[in-house]
Image (cartoon, rainbow, N blue to C red; front, side, top):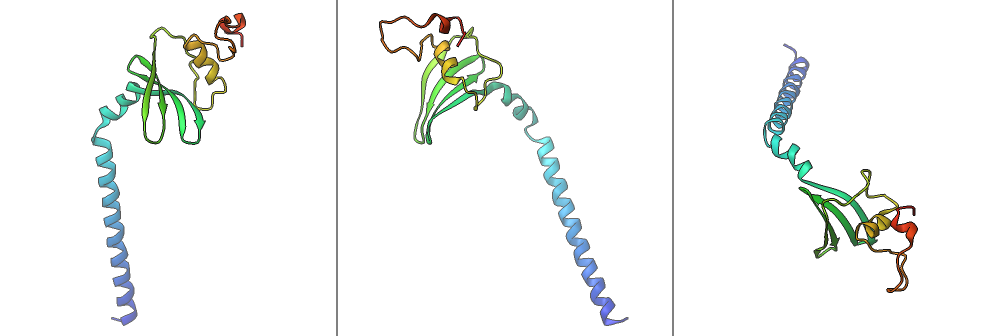
Length: 134
């Protein structure tokens, strides 16, 4: 045989084996992902859910989290997570609350039954706010 064809045959065999090893590796990764922890991963989405996030500063935020059936308001900083309040189970929250929700502070004030627009502690909250018309 020709020396040139021997080189090309060796080259083809080398890349053929490389292709087979990579295909086997991808198959193993697929099988491992498919058959390990399926039940835990799918059910964990229902156990803990972030309802809303309000950034106070670049590294501090308020997070409204639903854990099982309990709604918790937490303060999050780089070094600490603090539980601020546990809300009632029958609290009326909008279904579409997200991180970019512009009315987070109003929802929070309504939920905690406090008005963020109150300037005088002795003054009663705005009636329009109580009716949810803001």
